[in-house]
Length: 351
Ligand code: AMP
Ligand code: MG
Image (cartoon, rainbow, N blue to C red):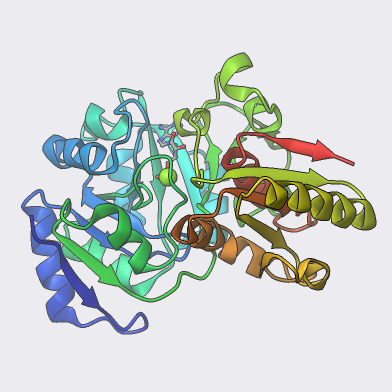
């Protein structure tokens, strides 16, 4: 299949292109598009065949459900069986935005989309291209991240092309995404809401609106897949993994720098190419190596936005060994470290 690649103005996307992309989706085809979190691989969420194609293009296990993207609140009523008051309050603040909510589903949502679960994940993305496309496609787009399953999620359209060229109908290029990590997922199927995946909207922000919020214990357990079954099936899989062996070094600033330099020297002596991921504050200490400055700890938004991109850059360079600092920043630290730890297969050295 030939994949059509089209650049679009994010602020005011060309209606002719959006119309054509919408028609592809209505016919059961696949279109990748930008959202504010990461690029999504879209298919008609109410079409079993389209959902099947998404799993196939990504190489994603079919029991890992897809998030349904909507553009208008009425469309939530059509697919969710009950919508608790707390969910409505959260939506009023954060939709459109980087928030996915889980509800019991109505029958209209096919099992293929929900991965066989009786529930459905729903999000209203905050991006003009995404919102226009959802409307043009009839209201419901199932869209997992537009990467090959297991690879870092795409934050620019070029990443989508690397993974999915020839496998999908169209890629809409709207430039680099704003957030760079996938949405915060909150489950509303029990009395007390539960965080299933950390994201831009952190626990503090959720609690401000919801009061008590539980955390899926699987998020906090480094052996999640072995010990506790996460409620979001996707959290179980090895994910975001670069081709290189990635190790995180955690501890006080000086100790971390010293240990990373020591490990880098050792790998270099063994003839391996070494890459280092460091914050702006410490990047200069590693200047003898291929160091990527991921951004300042003070404004961790940049660290979040650049994380997946930096992992892919090391892949492109054929790096053998990546050593990364740890980024437990107060705002997005939980989301950043959730992705980085998975990418590292939980290989962490504490100093
Ligand atoms: P992605 O679309 O690649 O960001 O992945 C979607 C994430 O949402 C995966 O971790 C899924 O397992 C999770 N998810 C989707 N639908 C549900 C659901 N009904 N219940 C729990 N988790 C879900
Ligand atoms: Mg994904």
